[in-house]
Length: 502
Image 1: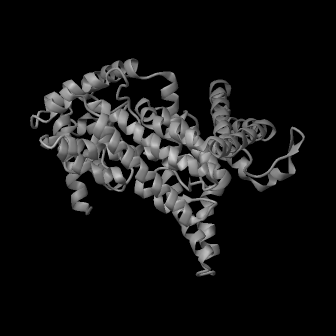
Image 2: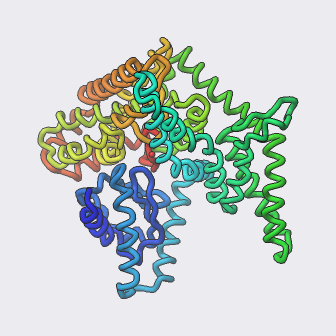
Image 3: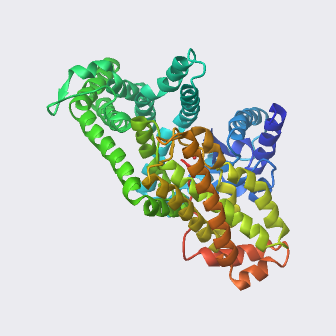
């Protein structure tokens, strides 16, 4: 997409979300433009969905506009620039105090209805790890390329350089986790990074804790997370009790000293044991109950996304990547997206007269094949009801396929989190060789597509719903019948499919 198109997309979106004065914050993740709004009633949602680059919208504590990977990173700066230009040039229709009061009331009402402390905590954990995903992807692909060149015996002089490029970030990922953790939980970010840096410092090998010698990196991202959380609490205590005249000297010193010592003589050992247990359990689960475990994981991932609980998996994925170079869970969870694609194709064929829904599917399928599932979830399967359930069945079948081969010794892993679908191929890794790894993952996708298609085609519609939706472009019938059908199974809670769907 050119710069002009990026700016045109941003210019099309801005008036439909209430203009510059309705924007309180702007950010983006892998696929979504996330904006804070003072007054959500100013959003023209149907017109917004009709913007060509917009794949869908999601309401959460921020208003999220799905643009897809790559596009969102280019549109966001243009959107930010237009907002700044609009604020400096546009006359104020109402006072900022009035808009802030309206937005605060709407935000409080929504949070009281949909938010729980556990979900809010998971979102904060996701906010720590999501900014790391681009580096994980880039380094993961470079690591895969390096492995390929090593196996082929090509360009031997380049191999060490690629290895250093791919491994540098992972060797210091604990520092970035500590930095983001302190920032997210209200501490000084650099102090969180400084405490977490202790974990990767080579000199820790000279220290004994719990009768064992520590090793650099022990505890990994979990240790860094715990150390930075402790640093935030120590810093807040210092800010409360240390006199202002001494704050600049005493607070950072005590924060690093106390948190550092607790990390060395407690948190590193404990987090190391937990990290080891996570890796051991994941490998045991797929080695002993691969097919069943894959069926459960693949089948339940879409509902986890709807409930926002998938964010709890991000630290687990990162821990597995840090330990063994790849996460064995992500390729199985990616099968949920395959079931979603198969279900969408079945809906397309079962509703030949519903032009609007078929147009939505046609525009969303390419993104679905690349692992961006929100347009199909929120625009097709979830409103219809049963197709969401049959899409989960497709994900379960694909997950069982990949899990079965893990049980047979042909495990499939991903060197990074974020992409899924076809976009995961460059990140695949496995002990059985790249050919077998790619074949198993591709086979799982095929099974997921087919099972999702068949389950939806034959069981995805009641006779009444199919008849009403085939009357033509009747959007109202989609809303009433589909909502009634899904109301007893789940509610469209927000959340990104991350890890396979971020």
